[in-house]
Structure formats: structure tokens, C-alpha cells
Length: 361
Ligand SMILES: *Cc1c(COP(=O)(O)O)cnc(C)c1O
Image 1 (cartoon, rainbow, N blue to C red):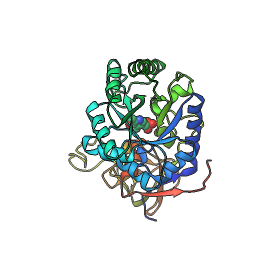
Image 2: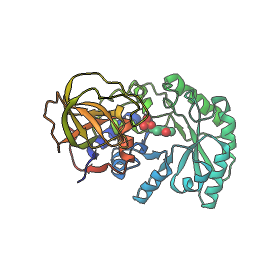
Image 3: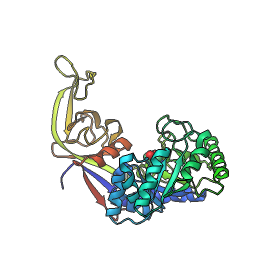
Image 4: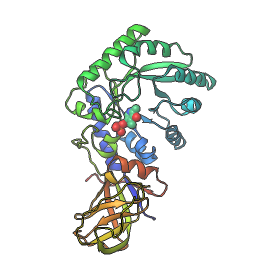
């Protein structure tokens, strides 16, 4: 096998999905497994479904297409509204999509009719995070418009928080969403099937038992993949955080000064680096770089190994105080957070290794 590698522990992912599906179902919600953090890797999606995810959501149509090609027949939800050029593919590969613009929903309706289908739409409501969604006051009008478009079925409403503005989902925000639901139902004269209440950022609220009755689902990626909630990145009790590990090879080990010698200009990414002089230190170059990982979300598993920096292809570590001596040809292991997960799964240079039948512990 060729390094670098990201390992996928299916048992751990299934365990996290099961824990979150149970937490959600206790509060009347289903779990939508969100696969965009891993480019909808089939093994990860299988684990989500085995753990109890009721549907799979992704922001990218290509990822949904990948799932269908792999044989997934269950419900798919497109989490980012399609652009005009994507509406035909959106109705082919997504059973439902999250939307906020009438002109796009019209195109989806036309595409659905051409395909002989009805496309389901969730109207997104912006509760203050200022990413996608209509403002709450405009939701009833928008819903009435969506509802009249041929080829479209308005399934419900939804919201997304803690993504752009960092606004925390609270009980009050969830209650506001339920008020909007009432207004929409009055306007269109029928009940809505779905109220899609949020993401991994809502997990603390669920743990606190503060999700009001009436929210029907959460769309969760990070919580399943990494075992953390997405407001303060706290570990979720009962979930594991090491379902993925990065392994990469050491290609140079030398003792060198800790401060570069010469006049300092820009580094590979246009930043001017600053160094502390710690004297001569043993350093290792690991064969992985910023094309494959995000520096702030990569954590050495070996005690005493410290990440100093990285260019596109070289990760530089201080190994002077490594508990286990580091030599050329060794494999170093790293834990990771969302940024690295996303980059590693997107990088064609990182091998994805599925570990079957392993244990949780
Ligand atoms: C990414 C995304 C999610 C999942 O977010 P996590 O924080 O990974 O749980 C849910 N809904 C939408 C609209 C998204 O874009």
C-alpha cells in the first residue's frame, strides 16, 4: 500500500451514527447522515446507514451521484441549493433539496417535469446566521410561491446555523422556527411533513433535552464522523473521536537549527513566518502537505512530536522530544479535525483504507 493513508474504521462510525440516531429519536427526530466531509465515501455512508441514519444528505451533486452509482437506493437530500446549470442533475440524483430562491425552484420544477418526477423542496429560513434562507417574515410568502410551482412538492422548512455567522442554535431559535412553520401551514392550508432543525451544532441542545417538540430531523455530519458537536467542538458523550486516522511516511530526519538562516521573505503561501530560536533540534519531514491536510486540524498521536509547519507537500515536525524515536521510513500517525478530513478525502494523493470488522475500543 502507498502512503499517505487515511483509515476508515467502519465499526466506530456505525457506533457514532447509532448513538446519534438514538439521541435524535428520543426527541422525536430522525437522523440525516451528512456525507460531504468524506466526499460521500461509500464505506462511510454504509456505516451511517447501518447505525440508523434514515437518509443521506450532501452539498455536492457529484457526491450524491457517487452514492447512486454505488447502489444506494434510499433517500438523498441536496444540502446546497443547485445553480441553474445543476437543476436537471439535482432532480436526477436528489429526492429533496434545500432551497431559498423561487427562480431556482421554478427551474427545479421544470426539470422535474421533464424527468417525469416530482421534486421535494425544503424552504430554508435564516434565523440570524446569515448564510442561506429567507428571513422569517418572508417565509410564508416564499412557501406559498414554492407550493404553486408545478413539479415541486413543498415538504417542509429548515434552518442552518453556526456556519457563517457562528450563531448558536438555542431553544428560542428552534421555537422561532416552529412559529414560522405555523405561519407557513396557515398560509398554504396544510400541515408540513418536515422541520429540519439543524446540524452537529444542535447536538448540545439535544443532549440538554432542549429541542422543542415538532422539529422532525437533524442533518449531522461532524458528529458522526468525528464525535464532536460543532459549537465548541466538545466531545459527544458516548461517541468516539478516532474513526479516522492519517498515516504518513517520514522521508528525512536531521538535526538542524530551529531558526532559518538568511533573510526571511514569504513562505510557500505568501505568509512571512516567524521562528523561535530553540537551538539545534531533531526534525522529521513527513510526506504529506497542505494539499492533503489542514495544519490546524492535524494532531500527532506520538507523544513529544510537534508539528512545526508544512508546505504543499512536506510536513515538518520537531521530534527532539519524541518518546518513541523517529527514523527515516517510519510511519507517523495523526488524529484529525474537520479541515483535514475534508482535504484528505478530497485529495487524490491520499489512499483511503477501509478497516472492516474492527472493534470500537
Ligand atoms: C454541512 C451541512 C450540514 C452538516 O453539518 P455538520 O456540522 O457536519 O453536522 C447540515 N446541513 C447543511 C445545510 C450543511 O451545509
